[in-house]
Image (cartoon, rainbow, N blue to C red; front, side, top):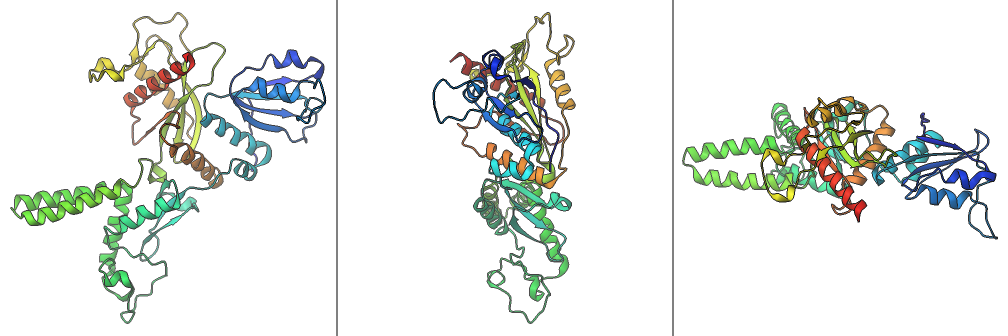
Length: 416
């Protein structure tokens, strides 16, 4: 599938004026394309940490014989966009490659693979759950994830099913009282609908409990067990309360096997903060990327000009520790800033103006989920930026604190 795509900057290249033209390219990270004289020529497309240096090596006339690749005689146009982070570069490179070569080529080049999910098969007469990395547009609400690997998904699913008595077999059941059952039914770990070990209503209720566990990340079971424990304590049945407490601790250990990102795919909504690409006007900004049901859009720039960064090391819980605008307002405010707006109102305006993507094509959704998983499951010291999950209204205060941290860290990096 080909999509429309345009870089932010375009330069017409002439080998006779190579040095003059290449000086117009910034020495910043970004993605670029070297386009030929014909529209049918495939462009050279890649990302780099220094646009001018990389393009100069490929287009400057060679002073002596060398095996280094030189495309000066074949390039008619240079297109490029400056990026502020590796996350933005990979996303931009993916869309550029998809536009020029198709999504299959982009997926192969960036080595993208659909993450593994838990699929709850609710349409089956006897619902079950299993691991898969094949998405279905009609049942996205039944997918829970993404997980970092198949092994992580299997462990979480196995431990969850140990809390319930849902079937683990994959066969299409035709209940028969003469069927001997399996080891799980003998161990009392399954309601055994295969030989009518329970009524259909009992099995359906158990399936609903499992579905609620996945939907609420375990909170439904914890709330139920906590109420039962409190009731047992009130009745002075301390042995029963202690037994239920053991179940609560086991359920908590299961919920800890899934990261915060693991949730129903239709509720995978978030705001990702990344360092913004450097601009000519040098207005300090942070890039906001929107995640809507797994699809990534953006960036939207949030200007930090005039923003006082909170000192989170002070340990103060005062409201004055929150990021806020200084009393003085710049003579020329940023495009998304007006003197009458508070910092919270500015952020809400940016969040409301962001593009709503949502899942349109399963191939696009799969690739965006792969990029998201690759960034999210990196070690904390290697992951740049922050993510805030949105359930209902966006957590404006938390996002503002995150913006101040990203801006402060980027400013410290530049000074060093």
